[in-house]
Length: 328
Ligand SMILES: C[S@@+](CC[C@H](N)C(=O)[O-])C[C@H]1O[C@@H](n2cnc3c(N)ncnc32)[C@H](O)[C@@H]1O
Image (cartoon, protein in one colour):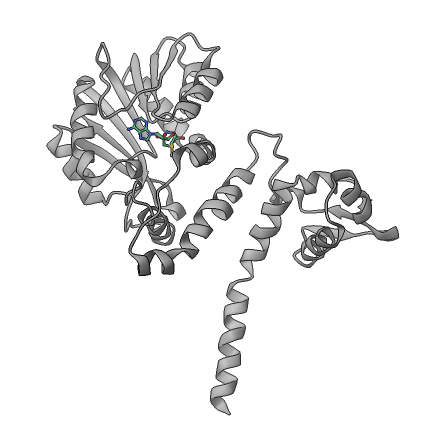
């Protein structure tokens, strides 16, 4: 009898622990179909289903969940309305919507983590499709820009930086923000993925001081040395065997006293262990993504490439992200 109670008690515990999933699921569906926008003003489910050609019974269920978690509100005359708009991702049409992070979690992270039993049994990893996911990943990485920019700006001023290279620049978000503030600093963005590089070229076209090159940072070399190299959210794309040669390569791009600034999640960090461990679980499921570095590995990579680590600071404590400055 006691065992039976215990079983139910434990099962209830799992149900409760899974509750936060509801919030993400609701927001993900709302973002994908732009439903929060549809329910911005009081409206019936039938009207929204009709306008957007959606199945009414499923929309009804989605609205019911929304009411239960207080993202939505039932009004008179069978109408409903989005209420917690501040907490929710804005419309897809807004390039700064936080929905991309939900998209990445729901379409990429969670399915990959759920395939762990299969991958473990077959002992065959998946291959990360850079073409399919490159755009989403570039968008989500850019969420860190806001936090990292003030420190980068300060460093550029303090060290009188005249030229920089952003390796693995994604859509060139860092470059655009920095180019606006430092129009006299010459900037080059290196991006391996063709589509992502094209988008970067398009987004940076109004800045005379930015040049984007679709190149592999492991093999490309600049015509002239630079004062600063940015390595933002790149290291998990580089195999453990290739990381040292990449650091030698990046160090060779620098003038004497030049600086490399790395932003990366750290493995087993002082802050943000949970996030960093799940990140590594995700990366490890692919044969072409790699675990994020430990602090010890960063120190070794720097020392062997003739660089001195000058700063090692958390950037997003709960995420295990650090910002590391190394000088030649
Ligand atoms: C996670 S994104 C980060 C984008 C940007 N740095 C940021 O922090 O927002 C990493 C980018 O590095 C690019 N990349 C991966 N390996 C590369 C390499 N060897 N050379 C140049 N770019 C690379 C990927 O295509 C991807 O767009």
